[in-house]
Length: 194
Image (cartoon, rainbow, N blue to C red; front, side, top):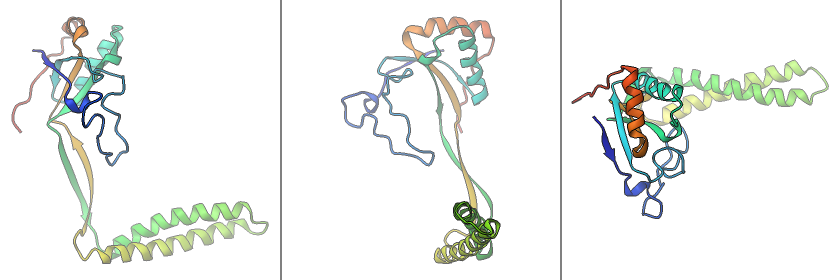
């Protein structure tokens, strides 16, 4: 089943909110209307929705292998969920240890910079930088953790997961894409509910 989708007002040039997405933890997003891909103001068609990213990726790979203009395609994750996996308990000792590790790297970097320009024992300069960085990192890590007042006594890692992945193409290329997908024998599936 194909669905036609028109771009929203936020993605059209000259309208309020055009390309004004806030930056996320991984940096600046690509503007919504950058002239690349199906988001550039032309109508699009969803040629299939898949339960996982590898399936959607296989579809685009198949299109590319058959000389389809894949620069007019996009994989869109929908039903996004933010998952924060708790890795462990955080206490002052662990915060100091993590700070010592970070400080040691910074101290090593500073020690290397000073070691390059030292005429004497450059290994000693590097080791002193490493130790001083680790000590100061541990101190700052412990202080920073104690200042939170126990509001976040755990470490975690965040990931963004999609419920399904839609492959969309420019509407004018949808028939050709559907024909190529018919040869692939990969059935698009739809996931309902959460």
